[in-house]
Length: 345
Ligand SMILES: NC(=O)c1ccc[n+]([C@@H]2O[C@H](COP(=O)([O-])OP(=O)(O)OC[C@H]3O[C@@H](n4cnc5c(N)ncnc54)[C@H](O)[C@@H]3O)[C@@H](O)[C@H]2O)c1
Image 1 (cartoon, rainbow, N blue to C red):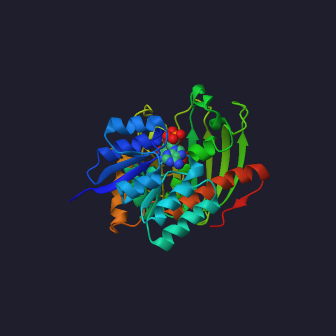
Image 2 (cartoon, rainbow, N blue to C red; image 1 turned 180 degrees about the vertical axis):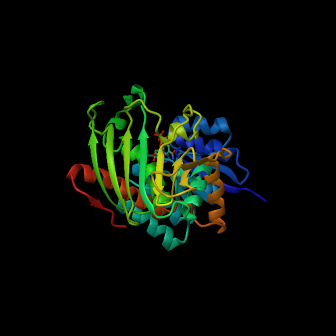
Image 3 (cartoon, helix red, strand yellow; image 1 turned 90 degrees about the horizontal axis):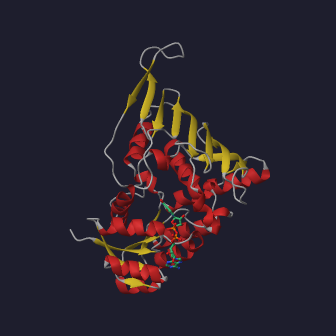
Protein backbone atom coordinates (compact mmCIF):
# COMPACT_ATOMS: atom_id res chain seq x y z
CA UNK A 1 0.00 0.00 0.00
CA UNK A 2 1.55 3.34 -1.03
CA UNK A 3 1.73 6.18 1.46
CA UNK A 4 -0.59 9.20 1.20
CA UNK A 5 1.27 12.44 0.31
CA UNK A 6 0.90 15.12 3.01
CA UNK A 7 2.36 18.56 3.71
CA UNK A 8 2.98 20.67 6.79
CA UNK A 9 2.35 24.42 6.74
CA UNK A 10 4.20 26.12 9.61
CA UNK A 11 7.41 24.52 10.89
CA UNK A 12 7.48 26.12 14.33
CA UNK A 13 7.30 24.44 17.73
CA UNK A 14 4.38 22.07 17.14
CA UNK A 15 4.92 21.91 13.35
CA UNK A 16 8.26 20.17 14.01
CA UNK A 17 6.48 17.52 16.09
CA UNK A 18 4.03 16.88 13.25
CA UNK A 19 6.92 16.72 10.77
CA UNK A 20 8.78 14.23 12.97
CA UNK A 21 5.72 11.98 13.32
CA UNK A 22 4.94 12.19 9.58
CA UNK A 23 8.52 11.26 8.65
CA UNK A 24 8.31 8.11 10.78
CA UNK A 25 4.77 7.16 9.72
CA UNK A 26 3.87 4.13 7.64
CA UNK A 27 0.67 5.70 6.26
CA UNK A 28 1.79 9.14 5.09
CA UNK A 29 4.68 10.58 3.10
CA UNK A 30 5.77 14.15 3.83
CA UNK A 31 6.13 15.79 0.41
CA UNK A 32 6.53 19.43 1.43
CA UNK A 33 7.07 21.90 4.24
CA UNK A 34 5.83 25.47 3.76
CA UNK A 35 7.03 28.27 6.03
CA UNK A 36 8.62 31.51 4.82
CA UNK A 37 11.27 31.95 7.53
CA UNK A 38 14.94 30.96 6.87
CA UNK A 39 15.05 28.66 9.91
CA UNK A 40 12.22 26.64 8.36
CA UNK A 41 14.13 26.32 5.09
CA UNK A 42 17.20 25.09 6.97
CA UNK A 43 15.06 22.68 8.99
CA UNK A 44 13.36 21.30 5.84
CA UNK A 45 16.79 20.75 4.29
CA UNK A 46 18.01 18.98 7.43
CA UNK A 47 15.16 16.46 7.24
CA UNK A 48 15.36 16.11 3.43
CA UNK A 49 11.89 17.42 2.58
CA UNK A 50 11.19 19.98 -0.21
CA UNK A 51 10.75 23.49 1.24
CA UNK A 52 8.38 26.20 0.04
CA UNK A 53 8.10 29.80 1.19
CA UNK A 54 4.53 29.95 -0.12
CA UNK A 55 2.04 27.26 0.88
CA UNK A 56 -0.04 27.73 -2.28
CA UNK A 57 3.04 26.87 -4.32
CA UNK A 58 3.55 23.78 -2.17
CA UNK A 59 -0.02 22.68 -2.92
CA UNK A 60 0.58 23.09 -6.67
CA UNK A 61 4.06 21.60 -6.91
CA UNK A 62 4.19 18.89 -4.21
CA UNK A 63 0.50 17.97 -4.58
CA UNK A 64 -0.28 16.70 -1.06
CA UNK A 65 -3.73 15.17 -0.54
CA UNK A 66 -3.84 16.59 2.97
CA UNK A 67 -1.96 19.19 4.99
CA UNK A 68 -1.36 20.06 8.62
CA UNK A 69 -1.86 23.78 9.30
CA UNK A 70 0.42 24.61 12.26
CA UNK A 71 0.69 28.38 11.89
CA UNK A 72 -0.34 31.21 14.25
CA UNK A 73 -4.06 31.22 15.12
CA UNK A 74 -4.98 34.33 13.11
CA UNK A 75 -3.77 32.66 9.88
CA UNK A 76 -5.72 29.39 10.27
CA UNK A 77 -8.91 30.44 8.46
CA UNK A 78 -7.16 31.91 5.38
CA UNK A 79 -4.80 28.96 4.97
CA UNK A 80 -7.44 26.29 5.64
CA UNK A 81 -9.80 27.93 3.16
CA UNK A 82 -7.11 28.11 0.45
CA UNK A 83 -6.37 24.40 0.92
CA UNK A 84 -9.99 23.26 0.98
CA UNK A 85 -10.81 25.32 -2.12
CA UNK A 86 -8.03 23.48 -3.96
CA UNK A 87 -9.48 20.14 -2.88
CA UNK A 88 -6.81 19.46 -0.23
CA UNK A 89 -7.95 18.12 3.17
CA UNK A 90 -6.71 19.87 6.33
CA UNK A 91 -5.91 19.28 9.93
CA UNK A 92 -6.03 22.76 11.45
CA UNK A 93 -4.17 23.12 14.73
CA UNK A 94 -6.26 24.30 17.67
CA UNK A 95 -7.94 26.70 17.99
CA UNK A 96 -9.64 26.09 14.65
CA UNK A 97 -9.66 29.86 14.06
CA UNK A 98 -9.35 33.20 15.78
CA UNK A 99 -13.11 33.84 15.78
CA UNK A 100 -16.28 31.75 15.66
CA UNK A 101 -17.18 33.44 12.34
CA UNK A 102 -13.90 32.29 10.78
CA UNK A 103 -14.46 28.80 12.19
CA UNK A 104 -17.91 28.74 10.62
CA UNK A 105 -16.37 29.71 7.29
CA UNK A 106 -14.01 26.70 7.45
CA UNK A 107 -16.98 24.42 8.27
CA UNK A 108 -18.98 25.84 5.35
CA UNK A 109 -16.19 25.44 2.76
CA UNK A 110 -15.40 21.92 3.98
CA UNK A 111 -19.06 20.94 3.64
CA UNK A 112 -19.70 22.66 0.30
CA UNK A 113 -16.52 21.24 -1.30
CA UNK A 114 -16.93 17.88 0.47
CA UNK A 115 -13.28 17.96 1.55
CA UNK A 116 -12.43 16.81 5.11
CA UNK A 117 -11.29 19.25 7.79
CA UNK A 118 -10.04 18.03 11.17
CA UNK A 119 -9.03 20.15 14.15
CA UNK A 120 -5.86 19.24 16.04
CA UNK A 121 -7.30 18.49 19.47
CA UNK A 122 -4.85 15.59 19.48
CA UNK A 123 -5.71 14.34 22.97
CA UNK A 124 -8.83 12.70 21.54
CA UNK A 125 -6.44 10.15 19.95
CA UNK A 126 -4.82 9.22 23.25
CA UNK A 127 -5.68 5.60 24.19
CA UNK A 128 -6.62 6.84 27.68
CA UNK A 129 -9.25 9.19 26.27
CA UNK A 130 -10.50 6.55 23.84
CA UNK A 131 -10.86 4.00 26.65
CA UNK A 132 -12.67 6.49 28.89
CA UNK A 133 -15.02 7.42 26.04
CA UNK A 134 -15.90 3.76 25.47
CA UNK A 135 -16.65 3.32 29.18
CA UNK A 136 -18.78 6.46 29.37
CA UNK A 137 -20.63 5.74 26.10
CA UNK A 138 -21.37 2.19 27.34
CA UNK A 139 -23.49 3.71 30.10
CA UNK A 140 -21.29 2.35 32.91
CA UNK A 141 -21.35 5.70 34.77
CA UNK A 142 -25.14 5.92 34.54
CA UNK A 143 -26.50 9.41 34.03
CA UNK A 144 -23.75 12.10 33.90
CA UNK A 145 -23.94 14.22 37.09
CA UNK A 146 -20.74 16.16 37.78
CA UNK A 147 -17.34 16.80 36.20
CA UNK A 148 -14.32 18.20 38.03
CA UNK A 149 -11.42 19.17 35.78
CA UNK A 150 -8.07 20.52 36.93
CA UNK A 151 -5.60 22.30 34.69
CA UNK A 152 -3.16 23.52 37.32
CA UNK A 153 0.60 23.67 37.02
CA UNK A 154 3.45 26.15 36.94
CA UNK A 155 4.97 27.45 33.71
CA UNK A 156 8.57 28.62 34.13
CA UNK A 157 8.93 32.41 34.32
CA UNK A 158 11.10 32.48 31.13
CA UNK A 159 8.10 31.17 29.16
CA UNK A 160 6.64 34.65 29.48
CA UNK A 161 9.63 36.41 27.90
CA UNK A 162 7.68 36.01 24.62
CA UNK A 163 5.43 39.08 24.58
CA UNK A 164 2.21 37.59 23.10
CA UNK A 165 2.07 35.00 25.90
CA UNK A 166 1.41 37.86 28.33
CA UNK A 167 -1.36 39.38 26.22
CA UNK A 168 -4.99 38.49 25.45
CA UNK A 169 -5.05 35.25 23.45
CA UNK A 170 -1.92 34.02 25.21
CA UNK A 171 -3.34 33.07 28.62
CA UNK A 172 -3.95 29.55 29.90
CA UNK A 173 -7.65 29.56 28.96
CA UNK A 174 -7.10 29.88 25.20
CA UNK A 175 -3.69 28.21 25.18
CA UNK A 176 -4.30 25.21 27.40
CA UNK A 177 -7.81 24.88 28.85
CA UNK A 178 -9.21 24.84 25.30
CA UNK A 179 -7.93 21.24 25.10
CA UNK A 180 -9.67 20.40 28.39
CA UNK A 181 -12.89 22.03 27.20
CA UNK A 182 -12.70 19.98 24.01
CA UNK A 183 -12.05 16.79 25.95
CA UNK A 184 -14.88 17.36 28.40
CA UNK A 185 -17.30 18.03 25.51
CA UNK A 186 -16.07 14.85 23.84
CA UNK A 187 -16.40 12.71 26.96
CA UNK A 188 -19.17 14.17 29.09
CA UNK A 189 -21.53 16.08 26.80
CA UNK A 190 -22.20 19.33 24.98
CA UNK A 191 -21.77 22.47 27.10
CA UNK A 192 -24.88 24.65 27.34
CA UNK A 193 -23.56 27.63 29.32
CA UNK A 194 -20.54 28.82 31.30
CA UNK A 195 -19.79 31.19 34.16
CA UNK A 196 -16.26 32.20 35.09
CA UNK A 197 -13.93 34.25 37.23
CA UNK A 198 -10.40 35.15 36.17
CA UNK A 199 -7.45 36.49 38.13
CA UNK A 200 -4.04 37.92 37.26
CA UNK A 201 -3.11 38.47 40.90
CA UNK A 202 0.19 36.53 40.78
CA UNK A 203 1.82 37.25 37.42
CA UNK A 204 0.17 40.67 36.98
CA UNK A 205 0.02 40.37 33.18
CA UNK A 206 -2.91 41.77 31.19
CA UNK A 207 -3.99 38.21 30.51
CA UNK A 208 -5.26 35.87 33.25
CA UNK A 209 -2.97 33.46 35.09
CA UNK A 210 -5.82 31.70 36.89
CA UNK A 211 -9.50 31.00 36.29
CA UNK A 212 -12.42 29.19 37.90
CA UNK A 213 -15.05 28.04 35.41
CA UNK A 214 -18.51 26.55 35.95
CA UNK A 215 -20.21 24.67 33.10
CA UNK A 216 -23.76 23.47 32.64
CA UNK A 217 -24.09 20.57 30.21
CA UNK A 218 -27.10 20.02 27.95
CA UNK A 219 -27.63 16.61 29.57
CA UNK A 220 -28.26 18.32 32.93
CA UNK A 221 -24.84 17.62 34.44
CA UNK A 222 -22.68 20.41 35.87
CA UNK A 223 -18.92 20.83 35.93
CA UNK A 224 -16.11 22.93 37.33
CA UNK A 225 -12.72 23.60 35.82
CA UNK A 226 -9.81 25.24 37.64
CA UNK A 227 -7.09 26.61 35.40
CA UNK A 228 -3.80 28.13 36.54
CA UNK A 229 -0.30 28.36 35.09
CA UNK A 230 1.14 29.85 38.24
CA UNK A 231 0.68 27.30 41.01
CA UNK A 232 2.87 24.40 42.05
CA UNK A 233 0.66 21.39 41.33
CA UNK A 234 0.61 18.16 39.27
CA UNK A 235 -3.13 18.13 38.42
CA UNK A 236 -2.91 18.83 34.76
CA UNK A 237 -3.20 16.68 31.61
CA UNK A 238 0.25 17.52 30.24
CA UNK A 239 1.97 16.55 33.49
CA UNK A 240 -0.12 13.50 34.30
CA UNK A 241 -0.91 11.83 30.95
CA UNK A 242 2.66 11.24 29.76
CA UNK A 243 2.06 12.47 26.20
CA UNK A 244 5.12 14.66 25.77
CA UNK A 245 8.76 13.84 26.47
CA UNK A 246 9.33 17.34 27.88
CA UNK A 247 7.03 16.85 30.86
CA UNK A 248 8.09 14.49 33.67
CA UNK A 249 5.06 12.26 34.22
CA UNK A 250 3.24 12.63 37.55
CA UNK A 251 1.08 9.88 39.02
CA UNK A 252 -1.96 12.09 39.44
CA UNK A 253 -5.42 12.59 38.02
CA UNK A 254 -6.76 15.71 36.35
CA UNK A 255 -10.33 14.65 35.55
CA UNK A 256 -12.99 13.32 37.92
CA UNK A 257 -16.18 12.43 36.01
CA UNK A 258 -19.14 11.22 38.05
CA UNK A 259 -22.40 9.60 37.09
CA UNK A 260 -25.27 8.10 39.08
CA UNK A 261 -23.70 4.58 38.90
CA UNK A 262 -19.93 5.11 38.87
CA UNK A 263 -17.11 7.64 38.54
CA UNK A 264 -14.04 7.57 36.33
CA UNK A 265 -10.77 9.46 36.72
CA UNK A 266 -8.29 10.38 33.97
CA UNK A 267 -5.55 9.78 33.11
CA UNK A 268 -5.18 7.04 35.78
CA UNK A 269 -8.43 5.43 34.64
CA UNK A 270 -9.81 4.52 38.04
CA UNK A 271 -13.44 3.46 38.08
CA UNK A 272 -15.23 3.79 41.42
CA UNK A 273 -18.51 1.94 41.95
CA UNK A 274 -20.68 0.10 44.47
CA UNK A 275 -20.72 -3.67 44.05
CA UNK A 276 -22.51 -4.25 47.35
CA UNK A 277 -25.23 -1.84 48.40
CA UNK A 278 -25.62 1.58 46.87
CA UNK A 279 -25.03 4.43 49.30
CA UNK A 280 -22.46 6.19 51.43
CA UNK A 281 -22.54 3.49 54.16
CA UNK A 282 -21.56 0.78 51.65
CA UNK A 283 -18.02 -0.06 50.49
CA UNK A 284 -16.87 1.49 47.22
CA UNK A 285 -14.78 -0.65 44.86
CA UNK A 286 -12.05 0.86 42.71
CA UNK A 287 -10.54 -0.70 39.59
CA UNK A 288 -7.59 0.81 37.73
CA UNK A 289 -6.64 0.12 34.10
CA UNK A 290 -3.14 0.59 32.70
CA UNK A 291 -2.97 0.86 28.91
CA UNK A 292 -0.20 0.69 26.34
CA UNK A 293 1.17 4.10 25.45
CA UNK A 294 0.64 5.44 21.94
CA UNK A 295 1.51 8.77 20.36
CA UNK A 296 -1.66 10.78 19.71
CA UNK A 297 0.07 12.90 17.03
CA UNK A 298 0.99 9.78 15.04
CA UNK A 299 -2.51 8.37 15.45
CA UNK A 300 -3.90 11.69 14.20
CA UNK A 301 -1.93 11.26 10.92
CA UNK A 302 -3.23 7.68 10.57
CA UNK A 303 -6.80 8.82 11.11
CA UNK A 304 -6.37 11.75 8.68
CA UNK A 305 -5.50 9.34 5.90
CA UNK A 306 -8.40 7.02 6.76
CA UNK A 307 -10.74 10.02 6.81
CA UNK A 308 -9.57 11.31 3.42
CA UNK A 309 -9.96 7.81 1.99
CA UNK A 310 -13.52 7.69 3.36
CA UNK A 311 -12.80 4.82 5.75
CA UNK A 312 -13.53 6.55 9.10
CA UNK A 313 -15.78 9.37 10.33
CA UNK A 314 -13.92 12.43 11.73
CA UNK A 315 -12.67 12.12 15.33
CA UNK A 316 -12.55 15.91 15.72
CA UNK A 317 -14.37 17.68 12.89
CA UNK A 318 -14.32 21.38 12.02
CA UNK A 319 -17.71 21.66 13.71
CA UNK A 320 -16.22 20.16 16.89
CA UNK A 321 -13.42 22.70 16.70
CA UNK A 322 -15.97 25.49 16.28
CA UNK A 323 -18.01 24.34 19.29
CA UNK A 324 -14.91 24.02 21.45
CA UNK A 325 -13.75 27.49 20.38
CA UNK A 326 -17.16 28.98 21.12
CA UNK A 327 -17.23 27.45 24.63
CA UNK A 328 -13.68 28.66 25.27
CA UNK A 329 -14.36 32.22 24.12
CA UNK A 330 -17.51 32.15 26.26
CA UNK A 331 -15.30 31.74 29.36
CA UNK A 332 -13.71 35.15 28.77
CA UNK A 333 -17.08 36.69 27.91
CA UNK A 334 -18.56 35.28 31.13
CA UNK A 335 -15.66 36.54 33.23
CA UNK A 336 -15.89 40.03 31.70
CA UNK A 337 -19.67 40.33 32.07
CA UNK A 338 -20.01 38.52 35.40
CA UNK A 339 -22.91 36.61 33.83
CA UNK A 340 -23.69 33.15 32.58
CA UNK A 341 -23.02 32.91 28.81
CA UNK A 342 -25.05 30.50 26.68
CA UNK A 343 -23.36 28.55 23.90
CA UNK A 344 -25.45 28.91 20.76
CA UNK A 345 -24.10 26.22 18.41
N1 LIG B 1 -2.01 20.53 19.57
C1 LIG B 1 -0.99 20.94 20.28
O1 LIG B 1 -0.46 20.19 21.09
C2 LIG B 1 -0.41 22.32 20.06
C3 LIG B 1 0.74 22.67 20.78
C4 LIG B 1 1.30 23.93 20.52
C5 LIG B 1 0.69 24.80 19.60
N2 LIG B 1 -0.46 24.43 18.97
C6 LIG B 1 -1.10 25.34 17.97
O2 LIG B 1 -0.29 25.26 16.78
C7 LIG B 1 -0.19 26.53 16.15
C8 LIG B 1 1.28 26.92 16.02
O3 LIG B 1 1.83 27.07 17.30
P1 LIG B 1 3.43 27.05 17.54
O4 LIG B 1 3.62 27.13 19.00
O5 LIG B 1 4.03 25.93 16.77
O6 LIG B 1 3.81 28.45 16.87
P2 LIG B 1 5.25 28.92 16.34
O7 LIG B 1 5.22 30.39 16.37
O8 LIG B 1 6.33 28.18 17.05
O9 LIG B 1 5.28 28.41 14.81
C9 LIG B 1 4.44 28.94 13.80
C10 LIG B 1 5.17 28.82 12.46
O10 LIG B 1 4.26 29.21 11.42
C11 LIG B 1 5.00 29.93 10.46
N3 LIG B 1 4.09 30.73 9.65
C12 LIG B 1 3.48 31.90 9.96
N4 LIG B 1 2.70 32.32 8.94
C13 LIG B 1 2.83 31.37 7.96
C14 LIG B 1 2.29 31.23 6.65
N5 LIG B 1 1.44 32.13 6.14
N6 LIG B 1 2.64 30.16 5.91
C15 LIG B 1 3.50 29.22 6.40
N7 LIG B 1 4.05 29.31 7.64
C16 LIG B 1 3.72 30.38 8.40
C17 LIG B 1 5.99 30.76 11.27
O11 LIG B 1 7.09 31.19 10.49
C18 LIG B 1 6.39 29.76 12.35
O12 LIG B 1 7.54 29.01 11.99
C19 LIG B 1 -1.02 27.49 17.00
O13 LIG B 1 -2.30 27.59 16.43
C20 LIG B 1 -1.07 26.81 18.36
O14 LIG B 1 -2.24 27.13 19.08
C21 LIG B 1 -1.00 23.21 19.17
